[in-house]
Amino acid sequence: MIDDTATHDTLTRDDNTTNPDKGTPLVEVTGLSHRYGDTLAVDNLDLNVRGGEIVAVLGKNGSGKTTLFRVLSTLLPVQSGHAVIAGADLAKQTMTARGRLGIIFQSPSLDIKLTVLENMRCQGALYGLTGDRLINRCDELLKQFSLEDRRDDFCQTLSGGLKRRVELAKGLLHRPPVMLLDEPSTGLDPSARLALWDALETLASEGVAVMLTTHLMDEAAKATRVVLLDAGKKIADASPSELQRQVGDRVLTLVADDVALAESVLRDEFNLHPLRVGNTLRLTSEQSGDVDLASLVDPIASRLGDNVQSIAFGRASLEDVFVAKTGTAFLD
Ligand SMILES: Nc1ncnc2c1ncn2[C@@H]1O[C@H](COP(=O)(O)OP(=O)(O)OP(=O)(O)O)[C@@H](O)[C@H]1O
Image 1 (cartoon, rainbow, N blue to C red):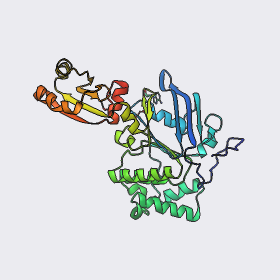
Image 2: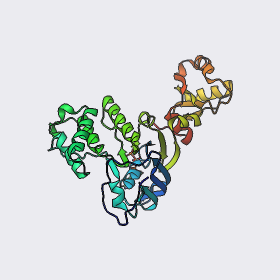
Image 3: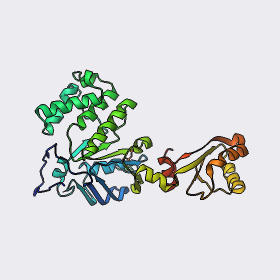
Image 4: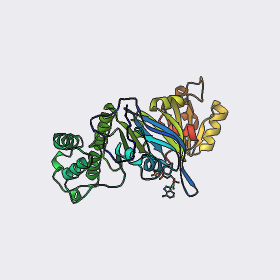
């Protein structure tokens, strides 16, 4: 447990080796709202992240992810509701909370006039890492992000993707109780993404609470829990597999040229009532009860002929979950 004995609000770096027990609530958000003028960007949000969890906050552009991230990372004030970071109330103990956070922003934060290693050492010094601990942690992360042979290169000579890797390595250097990452995969190639997830899983296994924002379904699917945001509201909060179960696990998806015609054929001739979004019709196993959807793929395809662009039956995706919860497509 975090022993919060701070009586005043100061920016202190907790001992980097002592993370709280797994399962300890480390991000506790209740009734949080944030408004920009008339726009309600975050709407009465309840959310928690425990030590050992990787929680992905998934939402379309404009759903409020960055605003939530900015409030939690102390860049925006708490306007209404409560947020507690590792025992420190964000509104009352802002600097204490800040000291318990590791943050990786979307915007570049490297000093491009310094080398890769110098950037990392500066970060280490800021967070009280010195000596062998700093050297070992730098080596570990340089290896993890395949940056060993670039360690002495000036950051201004690196490609965009390599710079992003250095940012991540730098941001993950210390082990705070809570790690916040805003769209961390932006600009990474597939191998760097794997390295990122390895690093996040290691942190979580050490008891760190990891929260990241993303608009990438495949990234969210790797998290231990997904919080789905839509227009500032939380519309789902469960593990990816539980979310899939909530929509019935299996889905038949049909994309048609003339979707209205396809819908009427399904309704009148197959007694099916799919959800229509754009030119896609979706039927979940939950909606269709006892009907064996897999066995209908061939008959529907042959009845609709050339009208069918694609027809597929398979496991529900987070896209299916989003459609089932909101009636709109995640990918426009
Ligand atoms: N500084 C601001 N002033 C006014 N409105 C803002 C401001 N920042 C964000 N908004 C509005 O608040 C809402 C939520 O925006 P936010 O950036 O939090 O969403 P997001 O999910 O992070 O989007 P994206 O994926 O595009 O980054 C949007 O309607 C946005 O236009």
